[in-house]
Length: 433
Image (tube, rainbow, N blue to C red):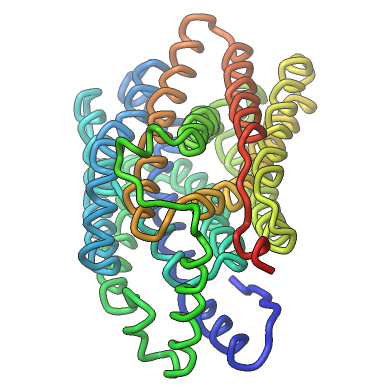
């Protein structure tokens, strides 16, 4: 992903070289991860009927990923910090790729639950590890854009995964049903790229032979300077983190945001299909709209957040926009074109909040506390991935309508935005200027 850095001479050379070396590769890693995590949402358009899954069964199965993901998130993040980020991320990708392939052969609801549980176990600690890894290479003023490039992989994955899923679900391929091929073919790249990760990434700037010596010295000195500016920060144990009100607010906000976001992600193809009654390939084509909106929003919001140094409003406003759009969806639910438009736009607005949100913990935490506490915020927040999809399935089965599900998502986004608006964080770099 091209990123425009505002600097000159040695500093500019170092920042540009780091961006070109690291960002395209982590973008690829997270794109593959996202495709493998949510391809079940597309498979459900055929799989649920083939295997006889109810909405509740599918919602619970989707959420089983987050049970093991949460249990092993913090330990995995600590292992990555203390051992080797590149080796641990490579191991993660190889493991989840193999599990994704095996998911294509499930036959029963129990096997589906086990496969999703194992996928969460394999992928646990990947995301907080990626965030911690970026903090080793990007200073505070560039971190929002770096995280934006990482998160842009989500909508980019949808732009690739949606048409691919539409083709596979409609194709008549030998031996296996299209939804089974979806898992098999999308699991293989994770294994191959996981092996490449071990050899391509560098754990620490001091080990980067691809940087000139003076560039390594500049980056190390700049990161050390930022650490010295964080005088009010301290190292947090897990227990102490729960006692720090700012971290608690971030955890609760992330839980609510992900309850709505992951409910949307796993149910979006089904929502569009049931609202519109369109063919599967048309549905998957329409899902390019929120992906495009999300990519633009992530990059622009991440860039503007870094330029202004403001994080709180840049995180809250996209959530409020998504909440209002899902609220409008309830009002216009009888008007199919308007309802589908609100659904697609609301699903895209959300993405823009991620870069600013994940820049906020770095203003509170010290470097040594980052791995464990990032893992804590992400793991507890990811419980929303269990709660949200399950709640939608239960609401659909109980009410026989999508209205309650849309209301649930709108309220989750509104609650998350409200909590972030109550949080105050300072940019230590700006305060020192």
